[in-house]
Length: 548
Image (cartoon, rainbow, N blue to C red; front, side, top):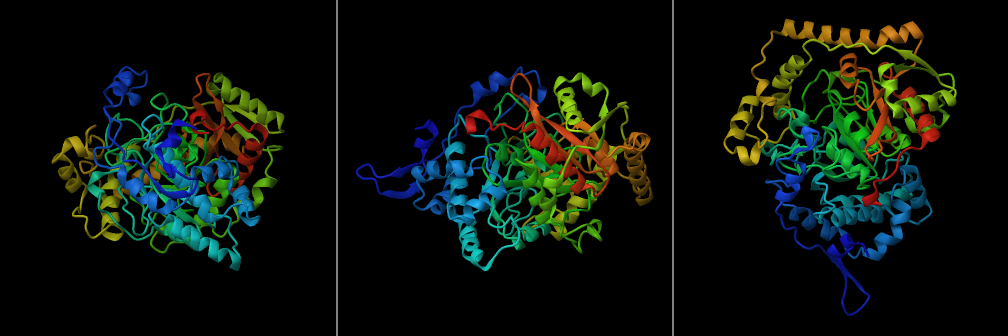
């Protein structure tokens, strides 16, 4: 038996009758030695000041999970493991149809697994902030409703939401201690997922305020959740940010799928760092209503999954026109993206590969694989372009958009009306609320532009991004551009071009790397088809060894 399994006591000492699960209390530990090991890490982002949260009592997890497990046992977990671990959504649905699995057992399996790994200091990844106390009840309801027939494959699937996405009855913190009591109604995309029958399992940790809290602090750290770790190398590899918990939890097989958000790289970065598929959609394809914002110009939610087909399923389940989010007006909706991915091919598709990136052997190998599958790859120059005023735009947007969220979507218990209010609150207890400082968000209220200046800045940034991609795309007749991880994320955000990252392999030390496909606005179906063809040709993803 694995060491971690003994943490959950599930059988009587005197007989083989399974009892209700009891989970031993979590005891905070002295992390001094762990921090010392990372003090001189080659990456400054991994020189942690702390790992455990000073605000979250992990025992609240076990108090929420334990009653939901009932008599689910270690024997149940092991018996179901081959049916669930690393399996895609369509395979899971197949097991449901044949009676090998129920939505209730599927949900309990994930909850058991979370308790198994997260209640052990050697395997804990700190990638979750809260567990849904109604997850198993939701799953049972899906089992009962299944007889009436279901139309969407997301039905009954346990989903993890990044904790800047509102979910009815649960706290939405954005990782900030200031939002510890922000209990809200569903975000629009959560309403869509609920209508399609998804089960909400947990809320994921993240880089606080979606990586808009501190300067040069670790990816994956928040005051509420502590330091998210990468299952491929805890304390060794970066988690990416800001959807760090969504990435880490999916890599560790804690759910069937997860939702992240991106302003500039916040899905692509953690997806590639955790050997996942991550889709940053065109802003406006999915609603931002009920999501704690940085920038109404650039923000978007998106899927983070272990396969391209799962990303297509999750994307389709979230689409819809939100009257409260003007960006979604007349957007594509009701598209069954997952049904067309299998028609995807690389043959005849024209790609642009950046010449300097071809010095990366892993990138070069995968470009060769694309060519071998019939894709045409044109080597293009990598221009050094940075949209002037990008950070300024984020500041002026957040200064308006965060108070707008508090007013329109936040809990009435929140006492804040401005970013300045939050800054002042944090200063009252810097140890618990801002151990890495708040240098980035502190710049938000200092940035003041007139409405005309903001409009001109938006236009300028968009023009820079579009020209950057359109110049080679028009010159060479390209369908998509190839990048690595989130290296082109800022310019893609500026242009509002969607991006799909897919695992392409691992460095010699085991660190995951993704290849990223970039296309024109609302070309998500094209990206998913290309990504599926690439995924099937390479099958690069491997589960993290310690979490198999």
